[in-house]
Length: 221
Image 1 (tube, one colour):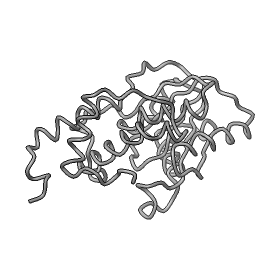
Image 2 (cartoon, one colour):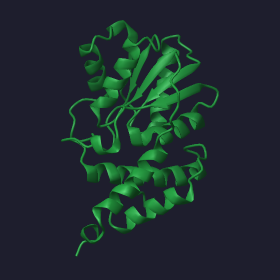
Image 3 (cartoon, helix red, strand yellow):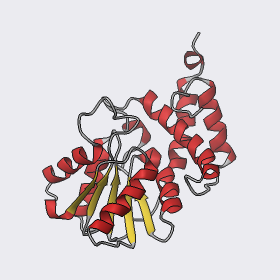
């Protein structure tokens, strides 16, 4: 019998909620110089970034992302290009949008974004970074590793965990991704990819419980 069928769904949900809560930075949003939307397979991230621009939170809206783990082979255009089109459809003026469409991971998001801004003669000091809910903390840690002198807050689509899965992102995919991202938060600082982030014991216990029942599809070897 599959381990997933042996474990009560309430326990799996509870473990997942612990990871979901940990991955959120709970930053307070402040008016900033640039909204940086990191690419992903979730178009709601683009909508969140556009909404923040339309609320006057920053004068620039920058989309960063080529094709990554979850979109390569599934999407026929770069994440940043798709996200920018969503922003235009919501009323964001093209003159306020910048696009970086080569990056394939979060570190490249930051490095290639620097190049775009330099080429535009821009030097934002404070950023609002927008990503999927369960990638807030990892996005923060990666940004601070690659661009420590800048200020940032991180946000995401404002959804409860039970409301997040949809036709494109299943509960199983979400949990596997959360587990994989927590492993990266633990491992990547030693590799120089992220700053160190403390992982409480209960969070790591939830991680181990989820891995034990089979949520291991997004782990690095």
